[in-house]
Length: 190
Image (cartoon, rainbow, N blue to C red; front, side, top):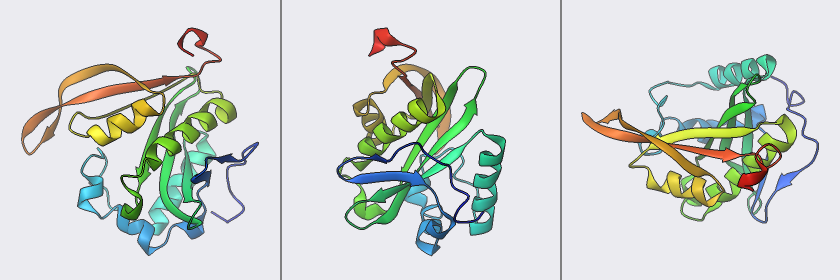
C-alpha cells in the first residue's frame, strides 16, 4: 500500500484537538505495533488474540479497501501531529447500509482526556457523510465502562444486552449493544 493509496475524503474531519485521516503506511511504526501487544489495551478487544506484523496489518487494511468493506482512519493529535489511535469503519454491509465503528486510542499518554468521544463523533460524520451509512452499531464488554461512556457521549445509544456473551477469567460478562443513527435516515432520532 503506497502513501498515495489513501481513502479519499471529500473534506477534512477535525475537532479542536483531533484530525481523522486515512491511515498511511508510515503511521504503522514500532510504537503503533506495540499497541496490539499491550495486554491492558487489548483486554476488551474480542480479536485481541491475533498477532500483527506491519505487513499483516497493511495487507488487512488494503484488502478491506479493495473490497469496499472496511476502512481504517488515523486519529491524529493536533498538539503532536502524530497518530495516537485508529478508527475502523467496517465491516460495511452495503445492502443494509450498516457498519461497525471501532475506536482505539493506542497512545496511553492520551487516555482520560475525552479524545475517544471526539474521535467517535468524527468517525460518525465520516460514516454518514462519506459512506452513506444509515446506522452504526457495535458492542462492548459490560465491564468496559469507559468505552460505553465514550460512545454514548458521542451520540450513540444502548440498544440491548447479550447476557453472559463473553467469558472473562471464566466468568460470564454481558455484551452491551450500542448504535448511532444517521439523521438523514432516522429524522425522528435527531
